[in-house]
Amino acid sequence: MAQVPQTFFDALAVRAWCGLALDALGRAREEIDAINVYPVADGDTGTNLYLTVESATAAVEAVFAGHEAGGDQGPTLADAVRAMAHGALIGARGNSGTILAQLLRGMAQVLAGDEAPAHADGPGLRLALRHAADSARQAVAHPVEGTVLTVASAAADAADGVRGDCGAVARAAYEGARAALAETPALLAVLRRAGVVDAGGRGLVVVLAALLEAFTGEAPRGLPAVGGPGSGAVRAAGAGLRTREERVGSTAGAADAGEGHARVRPCAGTAEWADAGAVPVPAGPAFEVIYLLEAGDADVARLRERLDGLGDSLVVVGGDGLWNVHVHVDDAGAAVEAGVEAGRPYRIRITHFGAGDVHTTGAGRVRQERAERAVVAVVPGEGLAGLYAEAGATTVLARPGEPPASGELVQAVRRAHAREVVLLPNDAELRHTAAAAAEQARAEGIRVALIPTRSAVQGIAALAVHEPERRFDEDVVSMTSAAGATRYAEVTVAERQSWTMAGICQAGDVLGLVDGDVAVIGQDLTATAEAVLDRMLAAGGELVTLVLGDGAPESIAAHLETRVREGYLAVDTVIYHGGRQGALLLIGVE
Image 1 (cartoon, one colour):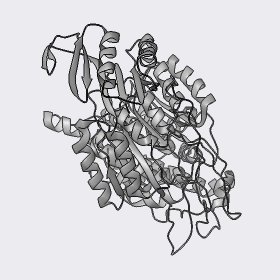
Image 2 (tube, one colour):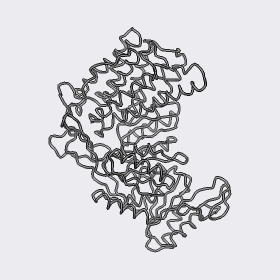
Image 3 (cartoon, one colour):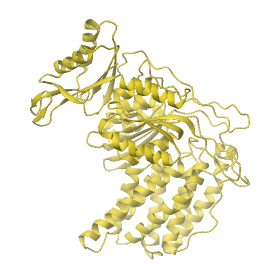
Image 4 (cartoon, rainbow, N blue to C red):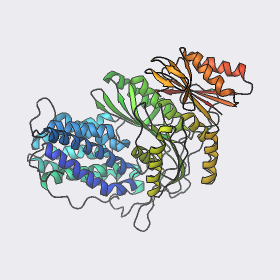
């Protein structure tokens, strides 16, 4: 970490600030998680802010490492703040993390502009804080007072009246934010009923305290307590919250990505409060959807309108062709599909809001309730991500050539926030990665069962028989049996000449793989898919699952469905759209 204090706001000051903020959020993370009641009481605001700043810090360190390797004088202020903003943007988590990313981007736009100096002084920092607060407010579809936006605006307002150096400006911003944070319960009823301050605002105060320390070398004393004025302690903010009701999926044969398999039961976004003493947080959408998006400004403007009609807590931050999209919705598939229409979404994270997070006082510590059981699944396309999420699973998107690391799987297990987790890797090549993630999660006290699913269609079969009410071992055995009884295949196009189990293929040939091995080499997609399906059904089957990738023509689904109906008695077919999943077609036979 760079030395403190820093006289000016230069690259070293950016590095010091990021390091101090990351350390401080690491210490405050659990406390901030515990008071998280708005917009959703999911108890992860502190963790999300920490992960966002961790990504920003890593990006800044990478810039310094690159300059050190090159033997030059080191990065400029513009280099450092751009890296900080970009790192926060691509690593932003949750509602507050996304807003923090926009705050940092707003600062970078001032400090790394065309006429930006080699280092910024007090007036430059004032302008950066002002622009940060204004741009963050503009990024939120429906700004709400009493949140991190209020705290950011108060910090900028307080800094506006200071004519000193960076240390004086940072001190004023911190004090203004601190005072505004204490008033958040008076502005937002849900905070007042819970007896807490806003969690996102609390996190921003920690970040501004780190900024002050970077310029003065002194850590502020007396950070505000988690409770609001006169609260004394955090009161029950979630006692008695019952689990969300289940919705029954649509009938078999549904072709849209968001529609359900008849045997897969998605969960609705309903929350009921049974305890008269509990804080009645209104029922909200069932899913949090976050993704990075490569798109132009005009496409993003249309996306905002589309997502605003689908849900709430909409925050779209970024620019210059790269955006971070955050929204709470009931239809996760529709939110992802809207991103596909606008541009190229990736790093898609869909989190199901489970039974709600409970905040109670006891032994001087706030404890957060975990769900009893959850399913975490790796999926190859946006459409399947929506399908799995609506069935109640926490998903990790794996794009072709971009397999998730074990750390991503561990983080997904943590997001699921359950005592017991069933992990579905859905790819034979991910078995070692998934095993490492399971071991790490077990070391954290989570009971994890790894079902070695080798395809997303096996994961669908496993999820279809998942029964959270059963004993864990019985549920795992049932899911494993369903996955094992499902043969899987895919139809794809060869990228180069290669030796296969079916002979030599040339670049451009259509390949049909059954259970991981090339079984058919053809020239026509539909004919090859039909040959693969016939080979699979020759051994029997009751249900065929077809998952179409973006490159597959719509006609192939209807053709194969007709083939099954006319050639195989008592065999049903279900069809899904998988999005950009790599393979043109996935086939499952149960």
